Image (cartoon, helix red, strand yellow):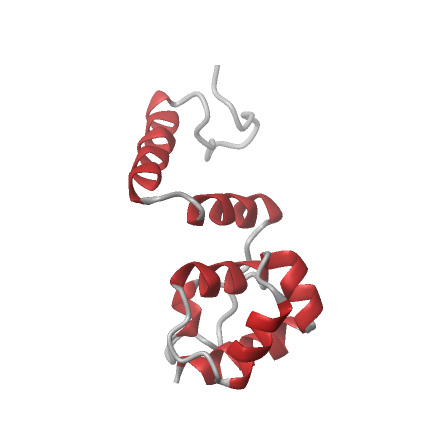
Length: 120
């Protein structure tokens, strides 16, 4: 069950309800109800913000991935948090923009040693 997995992720993160509330922007009362199982059908944006602030993804709520933590850098976590706040059209535009940045080659990571992260 996803709620059991969510509780495991919370325990693994070592974060308190108050810390989760501050980091995710989800009110403490909402989190208390969610973790107590009183909220049967939480909004996806709520659960997404919650798992991302703990360093996980929504996929980590499934039984097959709960044991493997996804390590996100603070920059990746911030990007996911902002992305999750966009509507469908905004998310589509964000994906297009990132794909354009990669396609130019200027911002693409280099696999060769000695070269910088940005190509000139």
